[in-house]
Length: 315
Image (cartoon, rainbow, N blue to C red; front, side):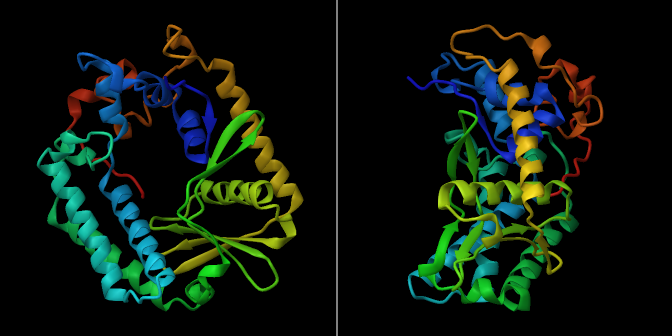
């Protein structure tokens, strides 16, 4: 039997910090939904947990298309800019079909389910046109940006990670990391890249610093031999994140504090009752109209009655 164990990632930490009740619905209420007979509250929480927004899903399609480009390169074949664009567009179209036709219900934890469809939010042609434009611009920048030339030129033998989920132990807890791309140059310096399709955010630096800590732990690379880059494909901008021992120590302190707070209220939902006082709606009301769980969360202040409101999220 699977056991509910505490784990950590930068995205889970953001969720926990944003709203503890949201974190509870995602990590505890939805736990063991597959064993619920008949389907009920656990299944419902899982369905809402899996919701994606159009901007976030479009970003995932770009990531998947770039991963396909790397797969072609490793196989010794070329994937053109147009083919990368078409790959992202077809992935989006297929996900749209899965969501809009309710096909997602056949595999609710695997197939695409968009919150715009779930909450009955009207999607204008202008929004879908912007998605197409995003794919075009991202493909163009990935192929033509001079700053990305070392990425395109890196030989597969030098690659250390391509969208590969991995983990390491920190404070006795499994910490997850998914570097979008990483390679070693001739000087054995690790270059770690993160693709972004939205606007720069403050947490982007922190996420990449956690990847540097991962590289130190799993690859045995010293901090001075690591370079970090956030590539904003929608604009062509690339930001190199400076690494110092002080910055890495600060990032590790943030991780430590986050883990301690999570550990203080962690419990096994298979064995123990939930103490919801430990999981207050700390995101209410500011984050409620963007929350996946707003239709079942009593802390959402009646926002479930306004499901038709437009939801704006960055990817």
